[in-house]
Length: 578
Image (cartoon, rainbow, N blue to C red; front, side, top):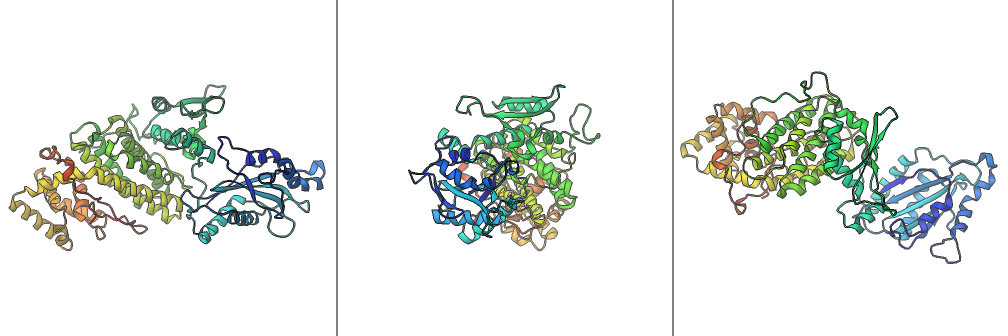
C-alpha cells in the first residue's frame, strides 16, 4: 500500500473537480465519498442535489475563523493511498477506515475533537484521495510535520492487518512511480509499460558505459527519443528532458519528462558523476587499459569475457571494501545488466530486460557511490554495447551463460550488502533481479553445458580417472558428491582443457573452490566449470564443441540457488532443477 502526500494547494474546488471528474483519460469510475471528518459530509458523487461547491464550502469553513492576513496561502492538503496490483479489491467501508487512520496518523485529524475538516473520495478500485483544509476547528494549524513518514508507517500496519502486499520500507531514493493516469493511458495505447517507465529504461540503457554527454545524447537520439535540452545564457548545458515520439497530450504535443523525474540518478549532474574519474584512470584518448591474458576472440564473446572478469572483481570489492566503493560497484552493475539486456539474444532478452528493470531500484541508496572505482564495470558495459548483439550460439552463447552466471552472484551479493545496511527495498529488488537472471541462465546455458558434457563423455577412461583422482586429492570432502553430479563430465573436460593450456589444474581447482564457499551448492561441478574456464582464460566453448547440440538436447536448470541465500553469504547451486 503506497501513500503519497501531494504538493499543498490553494484551490479546494479545483481539486474536487478533478476527484469527481472523469479523469484526464476517462479513468475515474463512480467517484463518491467513503469517509469524512464528521461522517456526514455531502457527497456530490452520489447525491444529485449536492454540488462540489457545497462540499468545498463545508471543508473551507474553518478559514472564516481567521483574518484574511492569517489565512495560509496554500491551505489544501492532499493525500492518495493506493493498493498493490495483486491486492484484493477493498470495500468502501475498509477504505473509509483506512482514510480515518491516515488522517489520524498524519496529524490532520488526530482525534482530539478539533482536527481539520477532510473528505475521502474513491474513484477507482485500487485507491482513494483524501482532501483536507489545513486549519483546525479551533483556528490553529495542524501538526502534520513529516506526514509522509507517518503515512508510510501506518500503511505498513494496515498491510499486515488486512493481509495486503507488504511494501518494504523505503528511504526516499526510489524513482517516481507512474501515476494512475499514466498507467491507464498506457493500457489504452497498448503499451507494455507507462511512458515514464519506458523512458527510464531507455535512458538507463543510453547511459550504460557512455563516456561523454555527446555519446549519451547520440544514443538517446538513435533510440528514437525526442530530446529537449535546458541551456543557460552562457551556453552551458543545465539539464535535459525526453519524450517518446508517439506519447502526446490532448493538444497533440509531446509529453516530456526531465531526467531527474525519471530517477534520482538520471539527472544530468548525477550522470556526469559517472564520467568523473581519477586522473590516472584513463588513457589520453579516454579509453581504458586492456586487461591482459584474455583469449583471442572478438566481438560479443570478447566483451562478455571482459565483463565476467570485471564482475568477479566487483564481487570481491562488495564483500571486502568500504561502503562508498561497494555502492559504486552496485550502481555500475546496473549498467552491466542494462547493456547485457540491450545486446542479448532473443531467447534470453525478456528475462535479462526484467532483471535490469528490477535491479534499477537496487542501484541507488543513501550511501553515496565513490565514482572512479567502478571504471572496470563501466568499461565492460561500454564494450558490451559497442560489440553489438550476441547470436546466442557458439562461443558468444557460452560466454553469455558465463556472464549471466556471474551476474547472478553479483546481484545476490548486492542483495546481501543492502540487507546488512537495512535497505529493504533495494535488497528485495536485487533478489528479484537474481530470479530473472536465474531464468535467463537456464535459457543461455543449456546448449553450451550440454556440449561440454558430451565432450567430457568422450574423454578417454584414463583421462577421466586422472581428473577424478585430482578432484579427490584437492577436494576430498566434496569429491564423491561432485562425481555423482550430472555436470561432472563437463568439469572433467574443463580440467583437461586447463591441463592442455599449460595450467596446473590442481592449483586452479583449489583456488576456484577457495574463493567462495561451495557447501550449499546443489551442483558444485556446474559452478566450478565457469570459474575454471574464466580464471584459466579458456574459451567458454572449445573449438571442438562450437557445433552446439540441438535445442532438444539442452539440459535444463540454473547453476544458481533455488532459494535466496542467507544474509552475508552468496550461495551457488545447481543449474538443473530436480
